Length: 111
Image 1: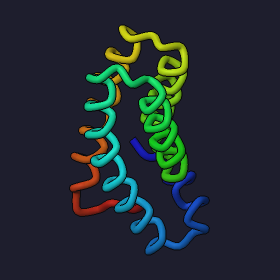
Image 2: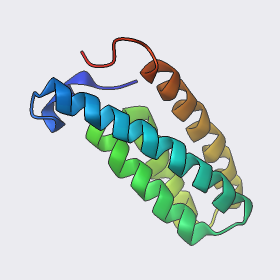
Image 3: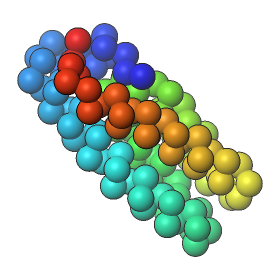
Image 4: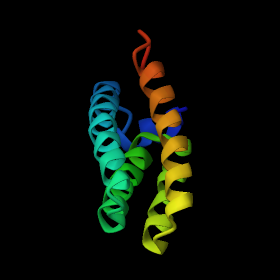
């Protein structure tokens, strides 16, 4: 789900900063997934690429490797305007986002 070493590295070992980073990532993920769903429905591949890029960057900063990998693919598929791949990847990204958000709601969030 989250690479705790990567998260702590990006937070420079500060657990409070790591917690804040996770909170901000959870908020961004909710917002951007909603946008991405609407954007893909309207076949706006340029905007899909930008949103996927934002998710990719944010997920890298907290060590959410699975989300990062999927967002990278989404960004490439949007660049290629590959609608079937984009739609399939959106489903996968949605599953990963839901899994992260469920995990995030657990009482212990930072290792």
